[in-house]
Length: 292
Image (cartoon, rainbow, N blue to C red):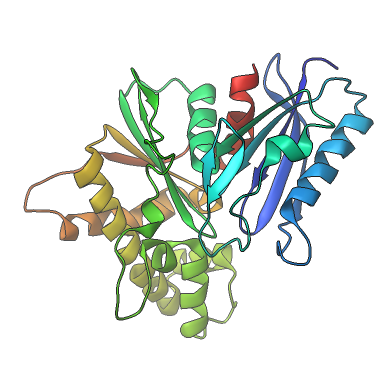
């Protein structure tokens, strides 16, 4: 099974994993488990367990593992060098050293960088400058230039857009207000009938339910504000929106795009905005691209 690579995508809510055939990038098996609290149960132990499971099940002698993870990642050492509050006690986690006993090669990438690499592997984008933001438990960003590749910054901290737009009155950031977690909190504050069921929220809004439309208008206002800042800073050819919520496609974009102009100078304009084409498995593919 030398063509098989293992990919693990660590998010604030779930850890997704897959075994991927490197010949055609087909997913042989895919699984998901809740992300441990990283206090009493450690994420790195769960990652070890997952990698060992695939190694034994598929009889892989030299396991090549790609990890996509939330947080600021030093991809040379395979270490989490900074992490926000969505994952406690994560800073300092070194995947390469911990997993060395069962892996012959390990690549560790920031999750949004991995997602963008996966998207670019699946699809042939013509644009030279591409920004990708993923919306989930938090919000992350990645920027790609066709000549320079993925931009990571001098301290691996480039594109940490979730920390933009800090509001001292509410002590919240762009990520706090505009992530899927932020949307769920907003749903609860509105006493929405279906608690934090985001899919049902979009369905109700599409069917004209007033409270669902109000919630999405409120939330998307914050999301549009952050996207306007991305436009001003990066001036990309295209802005991609990923994460599980991207499955809502035009139903999502129709709430966001009309609001962006309110945060830009008159007639400023903005890049084309679309949801990612590979939806929610891009980070798994991107995690192994450097192993191919």
